[in-house]
Amino acid sequence: MSGVRAGNDMIKAAMAAPYLDREEEHELAVSWKEHKDQEALHKIATAHMRLVISMAAKFRNFGLPMNDLIQEGHVGLLEAAARFEPERDVRFSTYATWWIRASIQDYILRNWSIVRGGTSSAQKALFFNLRRLRAKLWRSNENMGDSAIHQEIALAVGVNVKDVAVMDARLSGSDTSLNAPVSDSESPGSDRIEFLKSEDPLPDEQVSIMIDQERRSEWIKSALDKLNPREMKIIKERRLSENGATLEALGTSLGISKERVRQIENRALEKLKVALEKDSPAITSM
Image 1 (cartoon, rainbow, N blue to C red):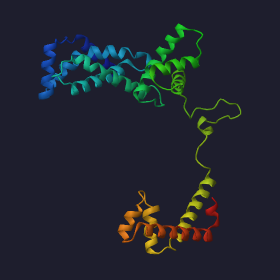
Image 2 (image 1 turned 30 degrees about the vertical axis):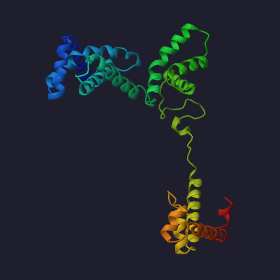
Image 3 (image 1 turned 120 degrees about the vertical axis):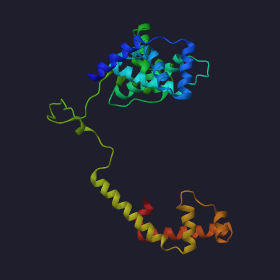
Image 4 (image 1 turned 90 degrees about the vertical axis):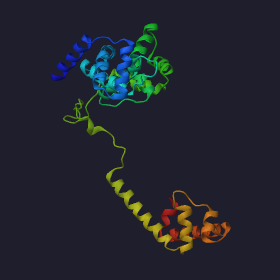
C-alpha cells in the first residue's frame, strides 16, 4: 500500500506544480548543469511530472500498475535532466519525452512477461504496435487472415514475418509455469517440466563422448612424441596455434628457407599419420 500511496502523492504534487516558462526553465537547467543545484533539478522534475503521467497513461493497457509506470517514467525524466544541454535551443519537455517513453517501455518489456521479449529497436516497435496495427488491418478487411496480417505488419515495422507470428502468439497467450500440472489424464501428478526434451546427449552418450575424447588426446600426444624438436616446433606453430605462422616467418626463425620448412612440415605430417594409423586405426576412419 505504501507504493500506491507514494504514487498518489506524486500525482497530486504534479497537478499542483506550477508551469515553467521558457526563460525560467533555461535558468534552472543551467543551474543544475553547471552547479548541480538539487533544488533546480527538483523544480524541473516536478514541473514536468504531468508529462510523465500523460505518457504513462498511454501504456496503461499492458496490465501493469499505473503507479509503477509513473515511477519508471520519473526515472526517465531524471535521466533526461542529467543529460539535457540547456545551450541547445530545445525545450526540456521535447527532449525529456523520449527518455520518459523509453524508460516506461523498458519497464513493460521487463515485467510484462516472464519470457523476455526482443530488445532491439525493431522488436520494441513490434511489441508496442502489433495490437494497434492488427486491429487497424482487421477493421479495413475483416476477411484478412493471420498470414496476410503478419506480412503487412512485418513490412510496416521492418521485421521478418516469423518475428511477427511469434510476438502475436505471445501477446495473445499467457505465461504458463513449467511447474504447473499437466491436465493429461494419462500423466496424473506430472508437471510440464518433466516433458521438456533436452538437447543434451543422454548420460551414457556423454560418458562415451568423454572417453573417446580422452583416447584421441592420448593418441595424438603419443604421435607427437615421435617428432623431433624442429618438426614439433613447425607443427605447433603451423597447425596447433590459433594464428598459424607462415612458412616464411618460421624459415627466418629457424634459419632455413621457407621451402625447407614446407618439406619438414610434410614429413612431420606423414610421421603423425603413420603413428596414428598404427596406434589407433579407428581414428583415421572417423
